Each structure stands twice: as C-alpha cells, then as structure tokens.
Image (cartoon, rainbow, N blue to C red; front, side, top):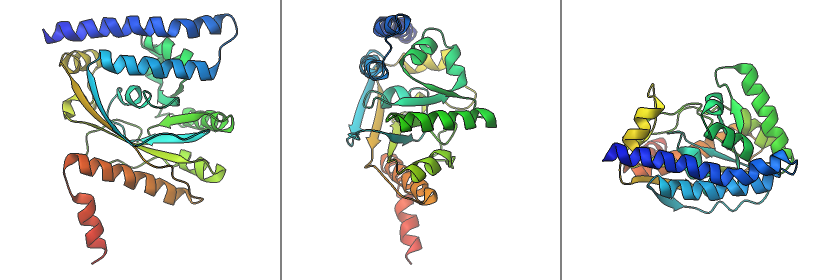
Length: 254
C-alpha cells in the first residue's frame, strides 16, 4: 500500500508540474516570459505539491521582506526548497544534477533557478555573480550555504561568499530553519532518489517544521554569518528538545 501511495503521488506530482508550468513555458516560447509571473506560479505549485505529497507543514515567522534579500537555510533534503518556496517567490540555488531530472529540471529552469557544481570553484564563482545580478535587479534568492545535506543536530560551517555580498551591498539576510520530525524523511549521504521517494512519500504524512527569522543586516560579513547561523541553530535546538545552545551560552558567561 505504501509503495502504491508513493507511486501515485509521484505521478500526480509530475502531472501537477506539467499543468502549472505549461503557461510559463508558453510565455517563454512566444517571448513574453516574466520572472515575477514565473516565481508566483511556482509558489502556487509548491503549495499544491506539498499537499499532494502529504507534507504537514508547521510554520512560524513571517517572510514579508520587500525587494532584494537572501534567504539562508540549513539543508536536510531535496524537499527543503519546495517547502520554503511555498512562502517566498525566490530564486533557489540548487546542485547542477537537478537540471537533468525529468520534467522537474525543465520546470525549475522555466520558473527561475540557479545551478551550481559545488565541487567546482569556477561554477561557484559564476553562481555568485549570477546571485549578485539578481539582487541588483531586486530579486530574492534562496541558498543553502552548508553545501550539502546532513543530519547533524546543528548547522555545519557556512560558505562565506553570499554573506560578503550581502554585507557589502546592504542586502538583508533572512535566516530559515527547517526540521523533519522523522529524520528518515531527510535525504542525506549516498541515498539514491527512487528508494527515498518510495519510503518517504509512501507514508500518510510527513511532518516538517519551517521557521523564518527577522531580516539581519551588518557591514561585517563574519558577524552577519554568525548571527544567521546562531539563529538557525537555536531553532534546531528547540525542535530537538535539547539545551545545548543554552548550556554553551551559560558556560561562556561563567
């Protein structure tokens, strides 16, 4: 029964994607493609997609930033950007492999995405330039600076490039924390896509927590990065029911 549910959801998601993206593709073909229309279309798609997949979302915070900003999140799964994009019309930065995914790779390209080969320094540099251009045009960008998914209790080290850009341009950074109630719902390590999809979306519901912080700004990129990282770690600590962050803070004052 669970495999049938997962396969049915996969087929439904593919059909939903084709239906939602068709108007965007049509605009592209006739030369009237518009970024705002594409991003809003994807936000509507994402909201329908998580319902179809059985994702039960618990959200806190209000991502109400107007104009250019960076949404910075911890990374658990390929599901992360889909969940976050239900709330914000942002350009996500994703690994280059996503471009080759049937249907979804084309849909992502048509609705606005930046691809990066994280192991390639030149690719990372080109992506930073593309992010800078989008910010200069007033767009919002969603990025996961840990560079990979993992199940550690707190965030790994962040890559500093986007924080340097935000600090120099005076662009706000909005921290985004995500947590899966069942750690097995995250996609990490050497797992391949089909087995994970069948196991995860064969379940009736997948519980996900998402939190947006207040916009952060600072002229020092190191401080900006640390404040962002600390905010996300505090949310993760609360969700895990631990007190590690508080214990560290208390120890530092004694």
